[in-house]
Length: 37
Image (tube, rainbow, N blue to C red; front, side, top):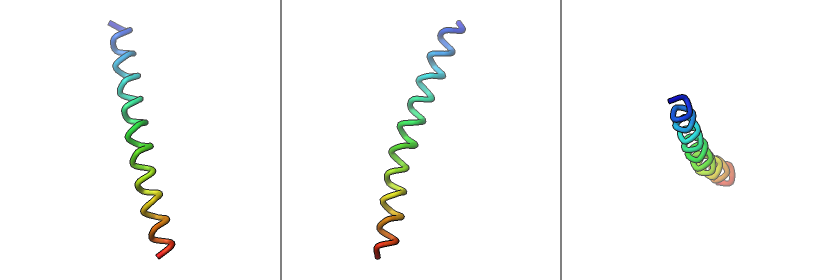
């Protein structure tokens, strides 16, 4: 039971980190474009 919960938490964390990195690139690109224009 504990191992399953830990694995689920790890999967959720990995998923959240992937999305945060993806969104960070989009936000950073938008900010840079705003500064250049």
